[in-house]
Amino acid sequence: MRKRFIGNLFLLLILNFLVKPYWLFGIDRTVQNIVGEAAYGRYFSLVGFTIIFNIILDAGLTHYNNQSVARNHKQLRTNFSNLLSLKLLLGAVYLLISLGIGTLLGYHHNSFVLLLLLTVNQFLASLLLFLRSNISGLQLFRLDAMLSVADKLIMIGICALLLFTPLFKEEITVLDFATAQFVSYAITVLLAFILVLNKAGHFTYSFSLRKHRYNLYKSFPYALLILLMALYTRIDSVMLDLMVGPFYSGVYAAAFRLVDAVNQVGYLFAVLLLPLFAHMLSRKISVTPLVELTFNLILAGTLAISLACFFNAEPLMKSLYVGAAELSIPVLRLLILSTIAFGSTFVFGTLLTANGSLGLLNKIAFGGFVLNILLNFVLIPHYQAYGAAMATVMTQFATALVQLVVSVSLFKMKFEVSAYWGRVVLFVAGAVFLSIIINGLEGIGWIWKFGLMLGTTLFFSALVGFFKVREAIELLGQRFR
Image 1: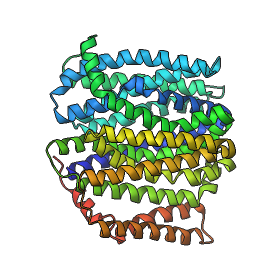
Image 2 (image 1 turned 60 degrees about the horizontal axis):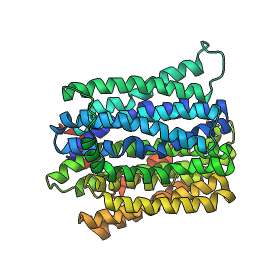
Image 3 (image 1 turned 90 degrees about the vertical axis):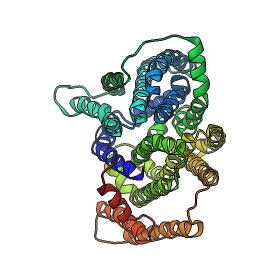
Image 4 (image 1 turned 180 degrees about the horizontal axis):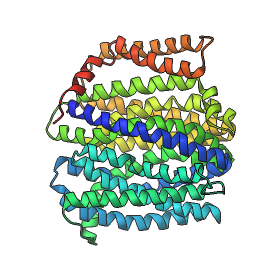
């Protein structure tokens, strides 16, 4: 299983490293620089608003379907018609509720038009994830890897025409940006539907209250988890917009874009890990070796990037943004640390999900939601975007730590506790020390310092035996079944 995981992860990372960084920093960042912090801040806030209501849109069907198909591939034929029919129905309900609540919150005129388009985009994005859950559940990871970047490739093509060619004389607006996303999602969803239909054999729309009630009952714990996690990871931008205005939501978005870029790697781990963990647990195969390998990889990578961004935040933000870069610098320094906690969640949260421990996860997520809301209410009025960053970091580390402790206890993982965690402490302390030394070097540019911090941290992780390079190379070099 570890061999298969490494091989498919390598392909998934290569494709996403080639596409998503250009999307985030070549396209998304450029749009924010053109439209300004206030306009982009409202867009970013509305995106967060549409994500919060994913409990209605998805109802946990994607995770439930992925786990169901991964455990029994024959389940695809039944799930495809039944669950997709239910998802289309939920999509209509989602649109009505999201737009209704958006109107009550005061999103009128241009904001309402943008909200309408973004809710449709969110529906298409969720539909794409559901279709991909069938493909990854069948463990067709290479095909899933292609689909994971297809929408971004199309978006890049459309937005590049809008931004960088003389064909369009007027400056792009956030509404143009959202429209480009709609076209990209629509094309990719159609492609994914055709691929899954080919595997399932047929699709028949069915409206059966009995079947829908049963499926919703089975998927409800997943839906609740999605809602709670969306609330404590995306509510910050909405609260910033409503409490102190869209400008500060834009400031927060500028820093969060880098966090989101780093988290994409962890999310890719989770996409592969969920069906693998489900498959291994159903056959009573020990997950400890795979958990240790992936946790080591994610911790080494997120710490390396966090340190590089922390010490080089000022030149990094000033090189990326033309607006309120100064205000985003301290936000980035704090917010980038949350990627370490996010990374841990992508491993241990995914493991608990694959095990069906939804009750435990929902309790942890509810605690995170309550903590995040309270912290935001206290901190945002005084510290604006920086306050939201403080709330995010504290919430993410608290929930990640609880998930880690629960997982180690529940699965009786034997990490050679003292030796393993001793290496973790040594690695973190050594990486911080080396980064401080590199930061103090004179006569070299910040880009060189950034690269040195990344390389040094990763090399040090191998030096202290935290990440076994030889083992990873051996796994990569072997044929995967």
